[in-house]
Length: 277
Image 1 (cartoon, rainbow, N blue to C red):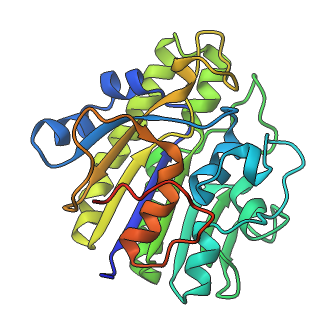
Image 2 (cartoon, helix red, strand yellow):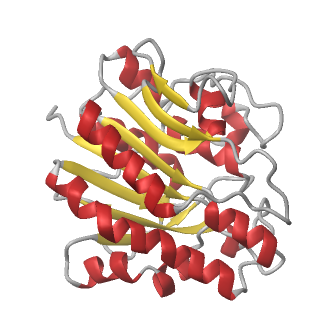
């Protein structure tokens, strides 16, 4: 298999229709044929940590066992980070501390805000905790800061796989609902930061996936089965063959697709076929 490098961007809480209306840079790339975009259907329940594990394990929450954000524990199923680490590939992340809990173990906000440890599944990382998050203070890191941190990890460590996860739209949606100017404008802020850094990542030789873990409804809620919660965007910036335009993609296909594109054997537990054809 040919080895490629992959970046996955998770825009937490960004629904499909909101991405199409607010992500002018990504949609401009699609319009010019420099990116491709599909609608993707998420697993259930549409809760953040459950979706993080689904995205990286290729399993439904009912099968991987992470059903919510509470009482998180280390992943105990084959997942992208462990498979890559076992194959001596480099991994990196700029992400919420939930990802440390899932793939590196219990999170300490002092010890683990920065990680440089080749023994860990996520070897190079910058984590944020959003400690104190509430309706009065949504604790959202600036999008350009997250993109800049990801860019520096790429330049310093040349990871084979990098995860960039931003929580700002999810937090804004819970505060103001998905039917708000704040939610829509915060989605644009992600797109605006990506416009400044995606060209750098492409120049560094990465294939780029941009998606969301789930959407949000007009009550400022997710977790259920509404289409507005389950339908998210999936953008691909790269030159590999992919499904036809208009195909409804399966969120369970992300994990095997990452491994397939990098050139790592896909574990038997990942039943969904790779998106690469």
